[in-house]
Length: 478
Image (tube, rainbow, N blue to C red; front, side, top):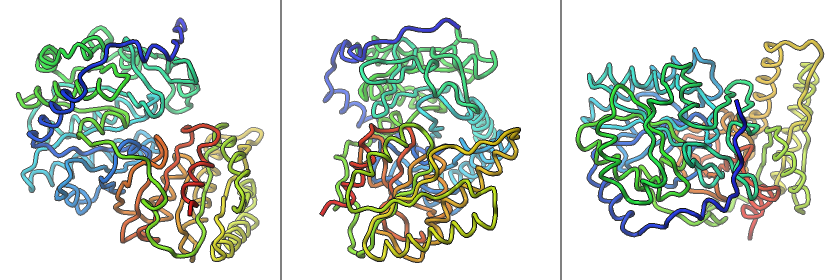
């Protein structure tokens, strides 16, 4: 495939501006008059990167989904963690979720929309997840799903779609997503940066690129809401719709047209990144969180930061964090996973050190060895088994604590998932907002191991070199 040209980031300022107040008013009217509950299925814990004051449920039990439907909020999230699932497990989970949502919705006599929130760099079980959801929706409601909206826009992470090509911002340039490290993902890799081609590639040719409907920036900025609505009304047979977007207002304009099409009886599923959900639910802006917004009780203990991600960005961020005075660093010797007795001794030793320091009011950073363990003649099965053992050990460094920390920060997608669901045992969390752009904070629920503390979910590939240090400085501010 011929490489595409990178763009100067200046292109983001080259499109016509719009009457933002007018657009916001139209969107608010559309959302307020729409009867649907919005249920976001999040394939890892980072999908709440743009929202605040919404609930996240970490299972899809009848009780959790019913609780979500009973909330006054229009939007709630279900954390599936499916990016860490096999295809077989993904299919099983989405069948269960689709069936349970349909059952509760019928009991509550409530209409609903389902958003499959995926990675903004196009990794994940696509189109598998939305195909399963479509089948479940059609089976339970008897209505056809007319179209699927694809919108990976996520400004906070530098993810933009222009002329159907999805870009990732690196400094002053926009690089086509298919030419970035994300596209080389061993599990979810791809070649196409053009989203129409990406859909054809990922569906193995089932959905042809020439049949994909696209909504251009030119249409959006010209406020051609009636024309976009007409396009959506004419879509059928689970047709694909790609939404170009470089700003929240592009998404807002599209959502106005979308709600008008829904009001005329059209049914849609959604595969989007975090930026879309905020506008679909007309969730307002909120300033970045300060210490007093997150830490409301003075328990006198230190906080804990757990680092599992091995990305170069994470390693650089840890090195910068080491320049912050007053915190202690403990390297967890994850290589000892090869020797079970020594590994168990290492876990117990680290937990003892953590508890001593936390009781002294000292904040502790636990990090795995920065070089990923590799062995000669290694098999995928053995590597996976080691990875699972290390992951379980890392979450236990929080889960086995007998001292309540002032806060918890987890760095990395798998790490943050395991710490939230296994170590902290969260069933329902409240999203407080973001401590830095793209870095969300949960307030743990009453049922959690450590109730009502802030839990900072820090993705492995977000932020600059100083961002982790800045986050900890905010949490430690007096």
